[in-house]
Length: 426
Image (cartoon, rainbow, N blue to C red; front, side):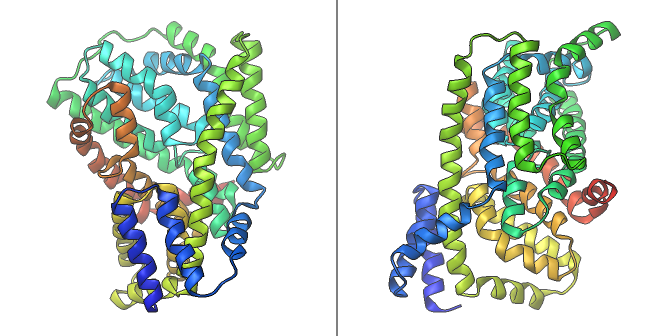
């Protein structure tokens, strides 16, 4: 790596620490590099446009739109009622309901922040109304939302597939079992928290009739990921087409099943989707230019050489990569980190014998943990804002769940069969 590469990375780190917008921190050093190297002015713009010129990429705003449509309808409440009847009587009561509801909603939105911004509001309010501490409710909501980015449909996995040129369908299928494992770990951890912190509980077990009733009411929404995945497995439509079908399906469910006739929510959801998608697009575009600079400066090669110098053992390399990604996740937006690090990390692990689909799940899950840690911690900030509690208290209550999620990450990393079983079977 030459001196220019050092300066580019130093500029990025400085700007990130100064908390300038992520896309500025990525784009400004890259533009400076292009100017010093005498590249044509149009070159960065061309690079940015080319990075977004992907049919698969269209799935991202469509899945975001699905989540927004649900947020403005009554679906979130119906999902919550079903989860409450199913697991509300376990130790932790509504805390367990929170986790299961996040899993179900993740099968529709594919985004941690969309999960918190939508169903998270219902969860936090319900928990605080039931005498749960607001800071704990916010902390658990932040932790359970990490399931969204790995359970299909996963927006970050789609982005990884585009960048690494890996089958998006295989990646979406690969995230299913790790997500279920994570949910199981969070629920077991919540049992421990419930017993040690004397959380409120609901001793009344729902009757089979009540479970069946809430299930039937929520069934159209629960079928969303089934329609999506089965259609892709059958080869009926691609991931992008699946996203479009899901939008159409949710609109039909809202209109003809749940009888939502005030169609103003469709426009409001579109506005929200435009804002969210716009922020993702500008980060992706800026990160693509920054990644190009890193490639020209052979940062990817140096990264691989450095790791292989330490060890050529695949297990050791996986540990080192996880540590690097966890550190980066402390300071960088997960999407930006994913775009920047995928061209560097993925080839190194693939060369070491790790399946690229497994690499994608590891990277996405790892970087999403940065949503729970200071100083960035976007999930925690959003949950704290919804709960109207100091963010420092929420970070403090999140620690136990962060440990649980780290343990889940290690299991997913070192037991690849969990990730690869579904894509290899189907």
